[in-house]
Structures are given as C-alpha cells and as structure tokens.
Length: 393
Ligand SMILES: Cc1cc2nc3c(=O)[nH]c(=O)nc-3n(C[C@H](O)[C@H](O)[C@H](O)COP(=O)(O)OP(=O)(O)OC[C@H]3O[C@@H](n4cnc5c(N)ncnc54)[C@H](O)[C@@H]3O)c2cc1C
Image 1 (cartoon, rainbow, N blue to C red):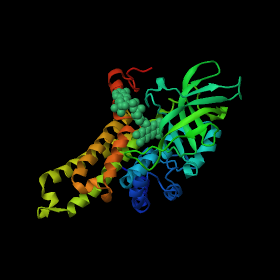
Image 2: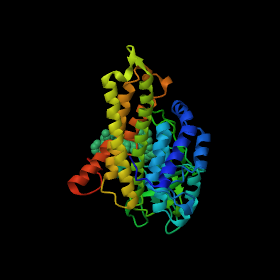
Image 3: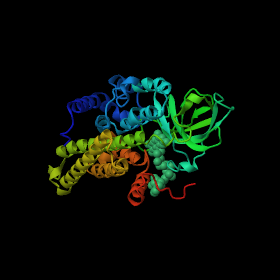
Image 4: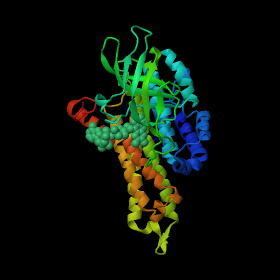
C-alpha cells in the first residue's frame, strides 16, 4: 500500500514514526490522564519541525505537501490521537488560513513563530447556536472610528476552541464594514488583547491533550491589520485550508484506529483463553481481519484524496467524504477492538480505552459527521459544495 510515495515522503514518514515512538508514545497515557500536553513535548515537536511542516519556506516552514502532512499526523496519532488532533490545527488549519488570506506583513508576523511553535495558534468558529450555523452567530466586528485607521471593536463569545491556551487566535465572526455591508470575516486576536478571556477549563471525553475551551471577547479593540483578508468574506474564503485540514483530521482518525489495532493485535497474540490462544476463537480473528480491511480502505481513501488535493484535482466534497466516513469508521473499529480486551480494556491501566474516546471526539471536532454528509448531499443533489443548513437563521 502507498507504493507510489516518493523517497522524501517515505523518509519523512519513517522519521515521524521514530519521533512518535520515542517522544510521544511514552507520554500518551499521561497526556490523556492529565488532560495536558507537557511543554517539553511541544518544544520537541517544534524543534523536530512538526508545526512548520505545511508552512511555506519563506515563512519559516518546510513547505511539504498534504500527503506528507497526513503521513506525519497519522504516525503521531498511532501513539497519541489527542496530541495529533491539536497538531493539525497548528500545522495545517491556522497557518494555511493565514497564508491564503493574510497580507505579507501578517504572514511575516504570525507564520515563523507558529512554525517554530514559539506561538501556539488556535482557530475559533463554534458558537452556542451551532458550529456550522454561521448565520446564527452573534460574535461581531463593527467599525469604531470613521475612515482608515479608525479601528474596530470585536464583541461576543465562542465555544470549543482547541488549543485555547494559544497566544494567537483566528476568530471567525460576523462583520460590518464601514459602508454598513454585513459579512463573515476572520479576525486575528492576540492573547494579550484587553478584554480577551479564556473561560474555565472543560473536562472532556477524548482528545484531552489540549483545552477545548470557551472564549470571551469583551469589546476588544482591533486595528486594521487585525483583519485577515477581506472583511466581508475572510471567514469563508479559505476553503483550501479547511479542506486540507479535514483530510489531515481524517488521517489522525486513521492513525488512532491503527494505533488501537496494533496494540490489540499484540495483545491477542499473547492472550490465552480456555487453554488455547485467544485468536483461535473465530470471531476474534474475524474482527481483526475486518478491522484490517477497513484500515486498508481508509488509508487508500485518504492518501488518494490528499494526493489529488496536492495536484489541485480534488473532486468536490471529497474532503468531506474522508472526514465523515473515516472518522466514523475509526470509532467503530476502536469500539469493536476494545471489546477484545475484555475488562482489561475498560480499566485505564492498559492505556487503550483512550483510543475509543479520542476516536469519538474526532467524529464531532472539525464538524460533526452529519454536517459533512449534509455537504456531500448538497453536492450530489444540487452540485453545490456547501452545506444544506436546515433552519438557518
Ligand atoms: C474535541 C473538540 C475540538 C473542537 N475544536 C474546535 C475548534 O478548535 N474550533 C472551533 O471553532 N470548534 C471546535 N469544535 C467544535 C466542533 O466543530 C463542533 O462541536 C461540531 O462542529 C458540532 O457542532 P455543535 O457542537 O455546535 O453541535 P450542533 O450544531 O448543536 O449539532 C448537534 C448535532 O446535530 C447534528 N447536525 C448538526 N448539523 C447538522 C446538519 N447540517 N445536518 C444534519 N445534522 C446536523 C449532528 O449530529 C451534530 O452532532 C471542537 C469540538 C470538539 C468536540
């Protein structure tokens, strides 16, 4: 499988596998238990170049393609799906959004520090009225003074922001420009901004290496260079960054299920039941074979579409197909394989139930499965690659 990878991609995958085995795996249970990624691991990931992998070289990155990025996050996810989840935000979603929308000055200001990991960066869209239902969002940017240089004010609140201990935030919100025109924009908010608050830490089921917290923007002053791209459509104009990210997010789900599979296969080979090897029980062997078949199909789907993305030939809604199907299938695999561990899988001490919990979180994060199926359905029925939003207001 993946015999078409080039030498650079293979070498990178091997290096990422070594990094994951040596640096991530020993901390994976701790990350899940403490709901926190140690600063030492973030520093090592920065030194290794993980954060800048998908950022262009002129802004301090390695300029790798999406196939390479997916290979890396898959390897990391085998060890810690939680760490890999936050990694895609810092490696792909945020820097690519800035590269696509930003002015040269904004790119120079943000990207080298995000690529090195010196400044963590987060992406905040979800609101209490529904993450994808942007027409209902209340967070708003309005002009303050008249004319250029007059500045802006941002007011509102957000939910579920991964990496909410970040230093820089890309905030998607409603906007009103100086002519009164309404739109949806992308605003850069720095952690130090007066009126900005990260609210209480929320404990969660899975993907526990980072806070996924609520944010408050209390009438924050924003200068003109805090608006990323077009004030009226910056928040929806960076589809390429979102698409790359959902494919990479699916790759983390693949890594999550593969990590669970690898550990389960090793366990089943060792475990004896009723005086014989456990795998001699036919359903056990079949479940492993079924999981292997699904993992093979997931891998084929993700890398074919990542390569198509890199060639600029991705078919409509295929990023959504990857996200919806791979994440749900990864959860099914993890839940099924956990069964093979019996009571030991339920106990935290074996360190495997986190895979199932992380897999479930990944079915919701980056858009719930049904939101992606809604986009796929819209593409199939109407030829439009955007979501059908029931009761959008
Ligand atoms: C671990 C984690 C990390 C996250 N990180 C971030 C982040 O960094 N930034 C950010 O902005 N958000 C983030 N989110 C939020 C995430 O994108 C949303 O939770 C997700 O998109 C679902 O939106 P919602 O929670 O508002 O659910 P709702 O919109 O209330 O939807 C509830 C359910 O309704 C169904 N549904 C929703 N829309 C449709 C539709 N169009 N058609 C059919 N059924 C539908 C789905 O089953 C969905 O689960 C994160 C969430 C999690 C769990």
